[in-house]
Image (cartoon, rainbow, N blue to C red; front, top):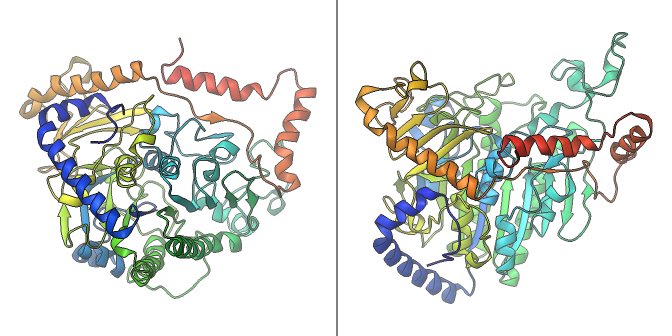
Length: 552
């Protein structure tokens, strides 16, 4: 079933060749179930994706482990009991690339978005990329995005220019909570506000390092210019999630009343690095645990709202973290740690990419399931398209890494379509996984150059990837090499693309003078300097193309 013109990575075709008879049979049965559900409910299923930051597998959803760590999330535990708890949901290892993978179905190496964006980035997700929102919109869905976008600060990257009908979003991440005078005054953020510090007589360029003109939050509608929402204060930051949740509930109610299917993405900021001192609500007391407790309350409210509206049995919720815990140089008080798996945010070990994740769809997903199949966040793109009857709108001129995992949702454990994964850290292939076995390409140790490195792991025997093996697993070496060669050959056939480049924060109808000055400063510099500062955009794009192997 589906669009047979969609291009997947090479490895998929080897899987399909061995499993096509059973998969084709499953797909016919699935389509029959979906058509029956649509006939009964009058529309394709609603889809809600909730994704928060930086959490180790087991911190929530498994009561015994949550108790050890001091996390409290009763509604997410209810979601697990009433649906699926995934033990092997994998992501990209950091927030920007993770979001790009989830919304485009493509590894970020393919679109130049493999690194975390900071202000002013002068770039972002290209308008040539196709998002879940664009695909589902063409199938008749209403679409909305709320809170942390973090995929660029240029106009073509805004979510209302990437397929979403209505949006309220933060262009950057949670660190923007401390980009203010108060934080600079207590050294939580250093050098952000020059007014808080003595003038440095040795600094000759007083603007070079400051992201002047940045915007904390934007609201927008498809086809219209965006508007700056609020200001740069911590008070505005604190309101973004609350306003997003209010709008989300309203969006759900409006579409339920109109009997129109909807796709809503809520990626909360969840924590405030400058939060006011209040009594802790969790035993742990860390910032992530406290933020998660509040988010859990909203998830419970949302589940109850869907039931009261009579649409819970036609609504899929997927809730998950975006990557592993921030264990390397985190802000004080985060309360994060690697648990079952070694590593965290930024790492290609399992601790960086294997996250807590859950799926809930009353009446369609059997309750109380533990699913051990491998699933990657890119799979959400293909799966949501399948559920929304929108596969015909998926692009067919590029590699789609995501695989349709509808069978896994509806048929449960062992019915997944993936047993392989290419794990990137930025633009570098860090590891390749096949089933329970993993091969590290980075840090492979002595002998790597001769092909005799101890770089192989059995993730069941050694889930923390602490004891690399050579002789016991050397028989896998050539096979892993061929997997990598096929993967890289596909990149030659379908070249990677660079991220989009441009002037930050154009397309804002109420832009402040400081924001307008970003482009104005560059225009003035063009008249005075012996070089064109606008060439920076093209120069950087050239180097990105060269790095991606798309130019000589």
